Amino acid sequence: MSQAALNRDRTRSANPWRGDFPVFADASLVYLDSAASAQKPAVVLEAMREFAAHSYANIHRGVYRLSEQATAAYEGARGKVRAFLGAASAREIVFTRGATEAVNLVANSFARPRLGPGDEILITHMEHHANIVPWQMVCGQTGATLKVAPVTDTGEVDLDAFAALLGEQTRLAAFAHVSNALGTVNPVQEMTALAHAHGVPVLIDGAQAVPHLPVDVRGIGCDFYVFSGHKLYGPDGIGALYGKAEHLEAMPPWQGGGDMILSVSFDKTLYAEAPQKFEAGTPHITGAVGLGAAIDYLEGIGWDAITAHQQELQAYAAEVLGGIGGLKLVGTAARRAGLFSFVIDGIHPHDVGTFLAAENIAVRSGHHCAQPVMERFGVPATTRASLGLYNTRSDVDALAAALRRMKEFFGA
Ligand code: PMP
Image 1 (cartoon, protein in one colour):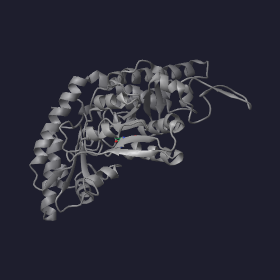
Image 2 (cartoon, protein in one colour):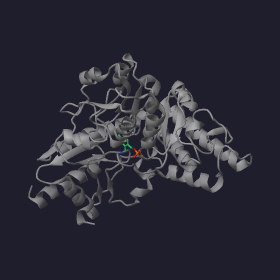
Image 3 (cartoon, helix red, strand yellow):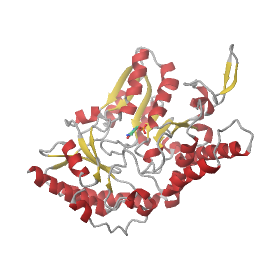
Image 4 (cartoon, helix red, strand yellow):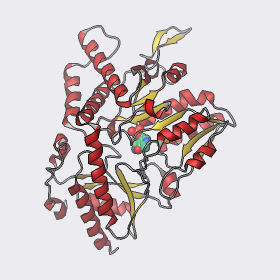
């Protein structure tokens, strides 16, 4: 580790939450990659350990105490996700491995049976691959077409073009709440209303939104909403799909196996109701408990405090990064959340990432699983610094100081 990292000023009294995260026992760590995966607070790790140690068994089937406790914990976590998203009923919440699996579930179970040649799925140019490839796959299987709404030079969805692309043939519109590559917060309520005006159901990819904004699926009016636990200070391998009850009830299961059935014989299998019919096999029970603990942790802090911290730090980072010559932000939308994507004249983003890594500063360099939007902005990759609850002004200062040293080093 460089001397700069070792010497770094670690006074962080201004952040009341940083101490909740054991990873920062490494005082020199500057973690600016929460958009990829957030760090976990001790309460989440402890909730999972405690559950696995003392309340663990398989769920739904056992009549003994441990199984009943485990079932209650798993279903309790579903209730927490329901409240977190503002859904009407816990039956509208399906546990998945994450946002990706949730999109694939909707693509296969909701979209595929409704698609044929001439039909269309509408997405936007700023989507993560998780909200592109599953739609391409079902389009390929059914002869339907994927339509893409353009984004403007500032990185906002061109709403007129989006509206114009909604038509008789559109079977579903799918778009990010917050872009992982640009940080743009999309006007999801307005976009949902535009789609609904054409009778088009909507899926929202909330993977980058849930750590930064309170979400209210009923207020937004969307038909489906997906997110992952690991970006929400919870565990990986768990996430959720919200789907309106009327859709989930009408959709066929997409994976078969145990725990999604009422009865099985070789002649005929009767499926359980939603959400169980979408949760074949033993789910990530401990992960669900951890996700519930992460939601409790965030709600304990409260959205007012979370958004105030995020806005303050984001404004500070914008000012500090704006002062670095040759640094160009990719994505300058008026409403952004949590991240800065940038390029620096004369230095490849991978070299930026490597230089920063040597100073124990964690950022992401690459296409961020959003190659089409990189192409749209004419860059093969960017460096992305993303903010979490635990970040402080001194993290931003450390990033800026390292970028300045790097420019000197490269003579850029
Ligand atoms: N959508 C967006 C906007 C994302 O940022 C990500 C994760 N990078 C995903 C979807 C996919 O999430 P996961 O890999 O957890 O399924």
